[in-house]
Length: 106
Image 1 (cartoon, helix red, strand yellow):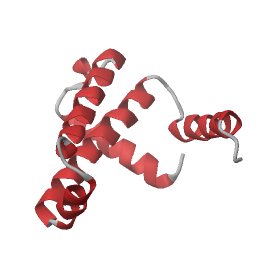
Image 2 (cartoon, one colour):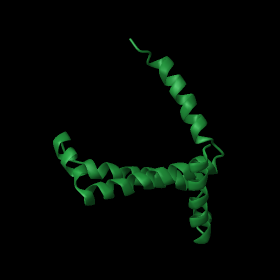
Image 3 (cartoon, one colour):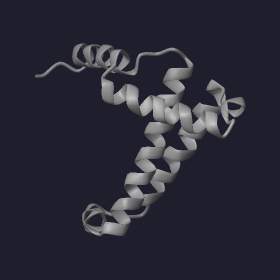
């Protein structure tokens, strides 16, 4: 992984450790939390058409809320990958190779 990713992961691990939350962060629990946070992100866009979304992301407060929900999703995803000893970068690269074969340019 990159230094930036490693630094973020260390920040997340310290935050969790300082609060003694490791006891709650088993893979199943992280997967559930990831799904819940993804639903909260989805809720930002519920019932909005493309024009309303474009307007929404131009609003500083609305965009900040979306950014926070995206960050929550990313944090839980990183924690889940870490807890399962999965190299997220390698997994994404491997999946993109499979996707390119499955969906060739035509």
